[in-house]
Picture 1 (cartoon, one colour):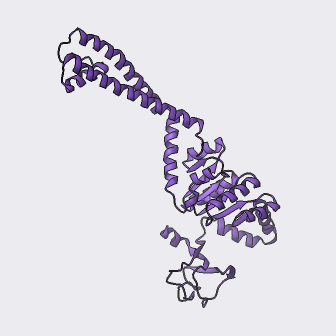
Picture 2 (cartoon, helix red, strand yellow):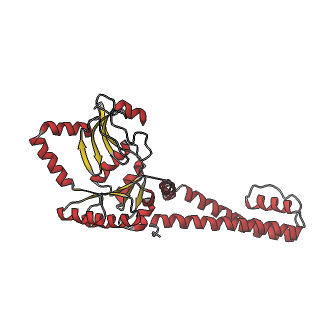
Picture 3 (cartoon, rainbow, N blue to C red):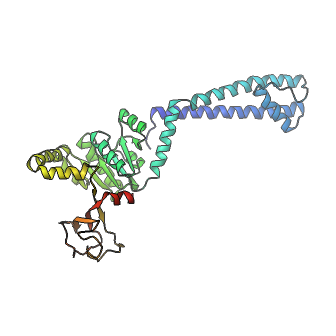
Length: 337
């Protein structure tokens, strides 16, 4: 179990003090009620009513004249009751109006929301790469959770209302708190390769079916990450260098890729879909399934048995597990969303 942060410990301590104060008030009410019943021989309701108006200092007169023993008892009840009541009210207002309690409630709500997530994405690290991944997931309206341990980043995440876990992404308890057992994929965008390797090993051990994408800075780290269990290893520097080369050597191709990936005004969207075993188009050709050229949905490539086939012909037979890379008009995708 993860240790509580200092702010949470302070809030829980304040809540515990408030509970003790409330228990003291209840004790005083019981003490006063029983005292009036025994000393003044009043009914239980009369004794309870007298106790309440006494400790609340509302100024009502006694429901019946008191004898000397009753007056002495009332004095003790006033000192005990008024003091405990005002202490309790002060503790309650101090707790409810504190920023720490407000933040604690927000974190509790966030933890409950994360615990209910299914097939979500986990982003480890909210640096430059992690922020872009989060932005892409947000634009795609996909559920996600961020893991980061830096206070300044956690503050930004909280202010933006982003679901996050404050902790070390290489630890089992942190990953489990982020819902790793029910997640669909995880992105390792931590600052160093060693942390990404450790995160990958831990995540793969907790969820063997998880799709893991990890960032690699050094070339030799790519092999380590693959051996650790990553499904995909990305080197931002290598990818950036290739894009720069592409912009010089094949600028038209580079402009096409930029339009596909980043142009929000493009009238088509590139996406992928995997054919499930129970799909009605299993065994059909692209033509029979309505996916041939000239249709709204245009396949530009297909992944079959690990082999990528570009521009599959209309007579290509579809099988369970095939992945189609398709072009879809944006008005269709927006309608579906």
